Length: 150
Image (tube, rainbow, N blue to C red; front, side, top):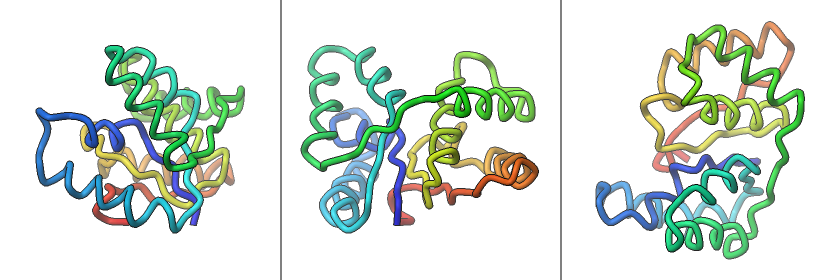
């Protein structure tokens, strides 16, 4: 199975302020699930990591090599599809990266998008809209779920 790992997932490995339960689930996800599947992040992940404070940046970037994650590049097709999602969902511009994550996973034919972003990504309205747009454009529809559900 091809898993696209969105930035919020590794964030939970290093965030002392977040839910201990989610942190434990995320640790188990990386220890048990990631090694059994083909796993990816994107250059959007790298850009988001580079915006973090120095220590967090190092931690987030280390995940790529530690777990042998492949990095997918944002293409014109990805950008165009993300803009299409934005039109349909009426997302504010400041959350555009969330749509780029979904579009990247779609264009690269990922089976699953794994995210802890319950506000914008793992959300019924988003999932239904992505499914509708992707079917209309003849793209695959990746499953969207939390690490707990994989």
